[in-house]
Each structure stands twice: as structure tokens, then as C-alpha cells.
Image (cartoon, rainbow, N blue to C red; front, top):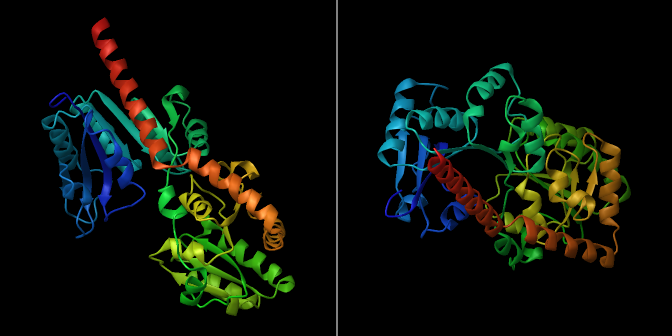
Length: 384
């Protein structure tokens, strides 16, 4: 401790610039009780670090943009920082940071070590399973961003005690998206959309995991029945050319708009009538929660944590993954939904998101977890 405060180190693989979904949670931790420092393995961006701007201590182990999976000097430097800063809680995010963090934390005798898992399939190969068994089991707690991720960790890592895996959840700035006053007509004009069209939207990297091929196939079916409809897709990735060719082959290329990176997602959601997440694998996607907070009807697949966000169908429409016909039926249903039915669904959805996926909720859960673990350690020390 320092000045009576618990020292928490948030440890990440790399600094690539500010991430609005993360920053408010870290800055929101009670400053009267906790002092937060931030550590990065590498520095991958010249952009200013908001934590430094807010007066917090920030450390970069190396400024190399690329770092091999394991380097002993890096490990020793990390352990030295943890020891010098008298860190009480080391909170590591993602796989590489967790491996370095747990090992260095043990060397530095950090009292409490946490590993935070942000997605599915983090035990996808033999090497990771071995590392998880040798190292991840040494963490005091493993935090998952959702129930599906928690179940995935438990299922694929039998050596980890089930009670040590906790569903922390994920969060968005609800008020930021809910209070948006973007003009829908203006947003549509910006993205080259017709005022009369029913607009479907999707966002995410263009990769097999996101299942955009099924979305485009479903959209082509919908287009045959609902002529005044368009699809906008935000994101970049290796499948862009393939997806463009698919939409051309299906005869709907002029109605599918690939927008690449979109800076203002509030404006993006404002342009849409229905947001669709057609993924075949997901952790706990914030984009769905953001779209709901923005007042946009949502459709998602039964993949990973998507049903958690959609409350198993009471906060949006849920369909099987990789099922083009079911997705097309849901899209048609959304397009033909009565105003009363749509408003009732959106009202329930927004209430559910506001109660379960906002920053204040995650901050409270984190503070409760930190506090309980500190009390547990103190109790063990007294008994020994």
C-alpha cells in the first residue's frame, strides 16, 4: 500500500491509443481507496496516453512495436516495476500479458494476481493449454467478460479451479449512445443511403469469425421481397474483396455499402433501422449493447455471448449461427415489425442494457472483487 491506498497495476500487451470502452472503467475506480498505475509491454502508438494526462503512473516495458512471445529481460523489468511500486493487485489483460504478468507477479511477490480473458477460444491450441495449466492456474482469479467466456475457460481448462473463474461482464457508456441527437436523414446522406430504404447495419472486422458472408446471403434473400432496403457494413479485414464479390454474385452489390473504418459509431447506428451481428464466435460484443442504447433494433446469432446481450431474445431477435434462411426470416420480421411491437422490444432492451452493461456496474463489481480479495489476503495473514 501507498499512503493507505491499495496499489492496482493494470497490465496490457500494448498501448495503441485510447480505448473509450476501457478508459472510464479504469478511471472510475475509487481514487480514495485505490491508486492505479498502468503498464504496457510495448508502445505501438505516438498518441498521448490519457492515464498519463490524468496524472497516473504509466510504464512501457519496451517501445518496440513487436515483441516475441517471451523474453527474459522483459519479464525481469516487469517484476522490478511491480516490486518497486509495491503493487498489491496485478490485473493483467489478454493472454500474453497474463503469462508475463503472472510469472513476474510471482517473482515480485505481488499479493493478488488477476488474469482477464476478453474472448472465446483462448485455449485453442496445445501450447496455450500447456501454458494455461502451468501459469494461468497460478492466478488468484480469472475474469471473463461474459458467461459464455467463463464457460469456455472452465470447459477447456480442467486444471483451473472452477470457483476461481468469475464472470465480470462488459460495459458501454450508455448515456453517450442513448443521448445521441444525430439526425437520421443527415447520417443517411453521409453514408449515401436513401431516405426511404429500410437500412440494415453491421460492424466488425471482415473475417470468417464475424460471419458476414451469411449476412450478405440473407440480405440478398430479403432484397427479393423488400426492394427498398440497403446494408451498411463498418470495418476492414482480409475478406473485403471476397465479400464484395459475393454481393456482386448475388445481385445486391449496389445495395451493400462497405464503409471501412467509421469514426462516429453513434452516427452509424442513427442511420440504421436494424443492427445485425452474424458472428459464428463472440466473447461479449459491445457493439450490440451500443446499438440498443442508440435505439436500434438488433438481431444476433446464438454465438458466444451474443444471447447474453440480447437476453435470450427479449432484447432482440436471436437466430442460429451459420443459418442464412433463419437470419433472412429474422431480417424480414424486423423490417415488417409494427411500430408498437418494435417500441415495446426496444424499451425492454434498453432497460436490460442499462441495468447490466454500463460502466458503473462493472466499476462496482471490480471494487467489490478487489475489496474481497484484499480482505481474504489480510485474513490469511492474520491466521498464519
